[in-house]
Length: 89
Image 1 (cartoon, one colour):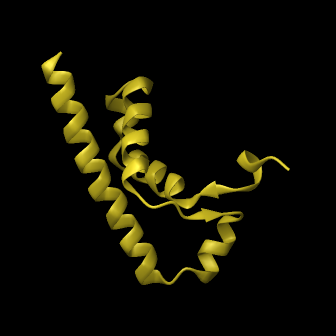
Image 2: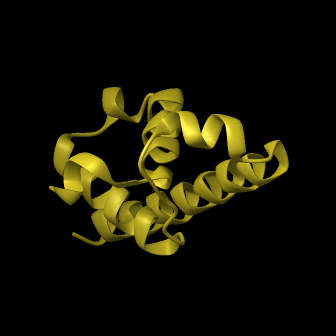
């Protein structure tokens, strides 16, 4: 069994969905986006799953909304941090 194929953190999907929604991949290079993802995911609690369908059927809508809001807040904080660091260089 390989963990990276069978198990993943659901917050990764929510984060990537949000980055696409913001179109940050059009604005920033892959190095910036990788740093951003690491900072964001380190702010969030892990939510490990095996199958996306499990989350669709068993996650209450209110909990999913809270998770999305946590991702948005973490992205805002991480982006502000990275932009501040970039301005200093």
